[in-house]
Structures are given as structure tokens and as C-alpha cells.
Image 1 (spheres, rainbow, N blue to C red):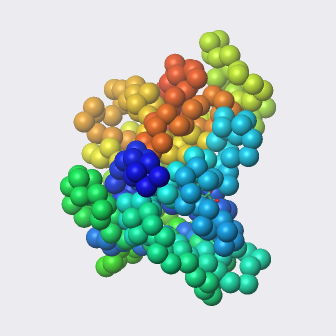
Image 2: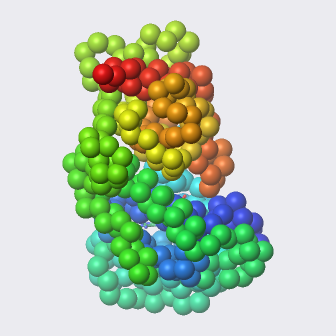
Amino acid sequence: DQVANQIAAGEVVERPASVVKELLENSLDAGATRIRVEIEGGGRKLIRIVDNGHGMVADDALLAFERHATSKLRTSDDLLSIATLGFRGEALPSIASVSRLLLETRAEGDEAGTAVEIAGGAIVRVSEMGMPPGTTIAVKDLFFNTPARRKFLKTEQTELSHIAALVTHYALAHPEKHFELHSATQALLVAPGVASAGERLYQIFGRETSGLMLPTAAEMDFMRAGLPEPPPWKRNEDYVPAAPGYMRLSGFVSKPELQKLNRNSVYVFVNRRLIRDRLVLHALTEAYRNIIPPTSFPVVLLFLEMPPEEVDVNVHPAKTEVRFRQPSFVHNFVRDTVRTTLMEARP
Ligand code: ADP
Ligand code: MG
């Protein structure tokens, strides 16, 4: 079974940022409103995540390291749904098989918490401990027992920047929650909860968008849902709804004047889950065609909401790829909505 875990780890745990992603999603699934991430050595030495979610009772704390022992898969119908971020039950056992992991968790109603220490997948120690409700997971010495994988890690700085981008993504998608990211030497992100995605955007990119690039940062809120007239995508005749429901695009796109030379400023979420999808990137490139130079990149924060059956997020366990049931519709929907927003904003 250890072998199975390590093979799964090869899929799930590509680099420190993939560990952070799985742990973050677990914290969000657990209803955490405060999430603190600490990183040492680019995540290779230490990744620690502290949340105030609902925690686990002692039995569940041990069960969490059993393969496919997810608490999130209730009916087979759930397989189609992405209401919760994760449901595969592979992340914790996989991560634990390639690191030294310490889980400390206390369920809300419980008197005491539980600590579980695991090294290379083997349980070293289980004990009771006092702690506030919530969960803390420390992942130390990532890939210590898989030198081949360790070799593929980039510099500390590179790994850290991947982690920072990731935590930023999640902070953007959950503006009402408190996020922190710390390295051994500095606070990289401290974002107390705010009321809206727009406020979060300024909280995180404020200085960059207003100071460095442009005096007035661009913000296009093109939330269409809830408007009395039919939303624009209904005009697209090739859209065949899979079920009652709708597709919604909201978010922010930078004005043409605000240009960045950095690809990392495009954030796309489908049903609150971060994706990196070529189709959507292509749609954005088309939307900005002849509006900004081909060498620069816009700042984009998009939230696509759609019925769960319209999108398969589990094409690959750790990657952020998705498969849309109606790819060309999604592509054109994104392109046309963003393009219209940009054209309307023209002086
Ligand atoms: P999955 O998220 O797919 O269920 P994981 O391996 O990521 O599988 O986690 C296994 C289980 O451990 C989860 O189903 C959940 O019950 C529990 N768990 C993991 N992290 C947390 C957390 N931060 N707070 C509460 N429960 C957690
Ligand atoms: Mg998970």
C-alpha cells in the first residue's frame, strides 16, 4: 500500500505548491475562515498550514491517511459534483508517503485534540494534545525518501513564487476569508477578510495596479446574472443547457492601459476552483487582440459559475486542467463578454 501511495504521490504531489493546493482545499472544505500558510526552504523544508475549520475527531484523524478514505464522497452522484473541492481521498496519504508529516487537529465539540506523526507513510506516533478547534498540518522534508523527485525541484525562490501565486489565487476566490502566507523571513501575504472580490483585488494588487502601472486601476465588474433581461449567452444558439441552470461570468479585467509583462496575472476560477485552461487563456488573448500589444498581459480575475455537470475538473488529480462539456461555448462566452467590456470602456 505504501507503494500505491507513493505512486499516487507521483501524480498528486508534483512540487511544494501542489501540497499547498491540496492542504488549502482541505481547509476550505472544512469551512475554515482563517488560513495561515508558513513556508521554509521553498516548501521543501517545511509547509505548515493552520486553519480554524471543523477539525477531525481522533478516529477520523487516523482514517484520513487511509487511501480513498475521504469524508466527502457520500453518494455516487457526488462524483459528478464539485460542490466540495476535493473528493478523491488521495491527497493526505500521498503527501504523507513522501514527507514527514505532523497532523494536529481538534473537532469543535471535542475536549482534546489529536496529534498524528507520520514519516514516509508510516505512523510514528499518535497522541492527545490540547489545542484550539481546527487543524494544523506540517509537512517537513518533502521528497526526503524519493531523491528522484527531489531532483526536479527548482530553486527555493521559484518554488516559493509558485506557492505565493497559488495562495493569492485562493485568497482572490474567497475574499471573505482571512489568508496569510509567511516565509521564514517575511510576511508575503496578509489579507484579512473583505466584503467583495473587488475589495480583495485592491487589497492584493492595489499598489501594483494603481501606482506602478496606472493612476486609476481598471475594474470591470461584468456580473450579468440577476439582471432582468436574459443574460447575453442565451443568445448563443449552440448552447444546450444540460440541466436547469446557467453559466455566469463575473470578475475584473484590466483596462488596455494597464499592461503587465507577466503571465501570472490571469486568474480563472470555475465554480471557485482555480483552473489554468488553454481554452480560456486563448479566449482572453482573442478578447485583448489589437487592444494591447501581443507582448504584454492583462490583469484578469474571472469567476465562471456553471452547473457541475458542465465541467469535469478531475481530468488530472493535481493539475488545474478542466474539460468543459461545451468548450466552444465557454470559449466564446468568455471572449465576447470580456471583449464587450473592453470596447465599452474605450474612451
Ligand atoms: P479528500 O479531500 O479528497 O477527501 P484528502 O486526502 O485530501 O481527501 O483528505 C482526507 C480527509 O481528511 C478528508 O476527507 C477530510 O475528512 C479530512 N481532512 C483533511 N484535511 C482536513 C482539514 N484541514 N480539516 C478537517 N478535515 C480534514
Ligand atoms: Mg483533499
